[in-house]
Image 1: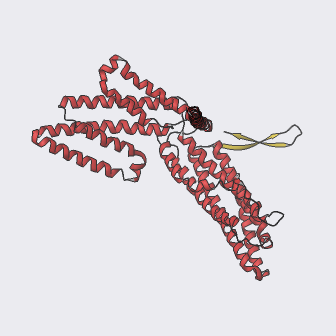
Image 2: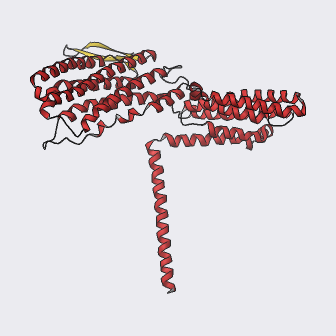
Image 3: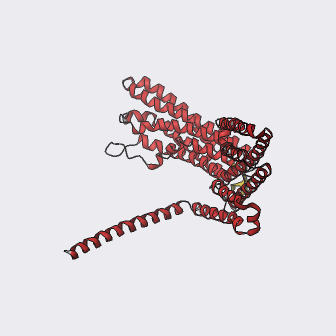
Length: 438
């Protein structure tokens, strides 16, 4: 009986160990995938560790520790809260923390000094009044959209620093020393975080925004280039085919506003780098992104006709098939061209030919619909439904044209390189066009 119980205990222990080991292996595989998906995450972790190690030296070197004492912990705390994944985010938080600390410490010392002049009875009253007024004003400022977007963290630190310094309760000379040490250690921590983030494998949030805008154009282009085949063709058994995955990519564009706004705000903190100059036109990126989302909403409406349970008969669809396929295909090609030249940061007008072809097809489609209503009055209801599809295609032409105009304006403001074709004679005497980037 005892041996049987021991065997059961061993089995339970073995099962528990196997489950625990399985969870450990699963967690390890998850970490491995996390690093493989974006190796920059591993680099970022090492960079944070390096920055914390550097500021920790304030405790280990005796001369530095004697100068700052326990205030050195503010340098460590600053690195922890300031160091972000991208350069723009780190610089923004670092500058916010440094400037707000300096200004708030100075005002806090001044408020403490004024309060002490009023005597022991008046000091706590004045201190309480100063804290109340400052906290109310600064907290209200955080509701201003422009302040919220760029300076929210600085206002938060301003509140904290002013209160800590003004209500410290120390003598005047100790308040000044306390404020000075805190400011210096916070500046040291901020500069350390910014320097490590900036000079060791930097991640530029502006580049991320640039690539996202181009990728969003690509996703819209993929849908438009595949829409014609998907909408007008059916499988051999007469049922619609399964929708390709490339036609689903546009959906992420619909919800891209928040990430684009955040990236644009952070990119403004970044210094000039590569072909992204100082004061790069980040606001124009937001305009291009907004127009791309408008086009994505039109595509979402168009996509509803692909998934609708009540489909128009194929013989009616075939009436508008030719020009409709041309419109969607040419608009897709135009967006592809824009996305390609956005990535290369070059100027090009090659998309204009595709937009012109889509406009010609639109005029043809209008004429086809008008004539079909006269020739096939019995199918007028189905033709009107196809007219709704045509109307969405017309809107997509307009959206594509607006995106192109905004993208060309961005190329001009951001000083994208010119792409100029030049003609060179071939060996057989024929002429070849060679694209040069200047």
